[in-house]
Image (tube, rainbow, N blue to C red; front, side):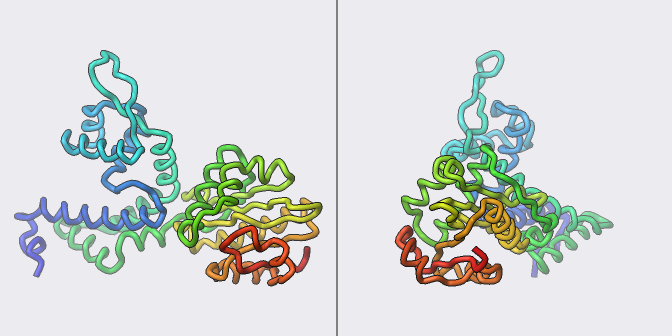
Length: 318
């Protein structure tokens, strides 16, 4: 029994609300996987602020169609989360405005790259074949979502798997930090040596003769990174390799690792090693596939660098 379907015209508003909540719930799954501190219902406000800059509450109401009490409540939560902050007074200095904070801008940028294109593409595909009366279209949408939830469709509809390798640039330093923090904190605890490198890549990697590469997927933006840290003459550690969970399935790790190996040759590396943990089974399998071998000598010389390290490997060609 589904009373909203049985009386579709009487309960149309309730049914539309149910459908909206269902779709927002699926988008929340994608947001959680990406590790973003935002709720789906907050996106219209963030998008409006990104598009136009500082806005008053009234202007946000007009831009989003959300009631003023709803906007006020949402803004309070966004301010509490550090995503929105007070902006300059409007022209007549009578009304308060708000704007995206630095953190809010970063969240919107990642959402635009990692979440929005996939959701938009999957909803467009979901609606592409709809025809007939509205209630019949709602039936079709709900049946389709029963068969495959929106978050699964979004994961499957992410644009192309062509991975582009990008060099280090100052604007990508935040990606280097955030991508690595995500995977490290998901499995381990962030250690002091992690913080030193992630917060000061110029000092600890680039200025010492190493390099950092990034992987980008169309529609998702920068989704992976890896570094070569010079630890001696002709000696490099492959380190800080991470891929966002939202990009899994695009073979980003393999493309990134192949590019890093080629870069190591360009840097005249004679020894190339890495330190990891047995818990990183998928990564170890990839390392083995591309030529790394377990090495007790590397473990003895460098393994104490990380508390989590119980695996040390050296590439067979270096």
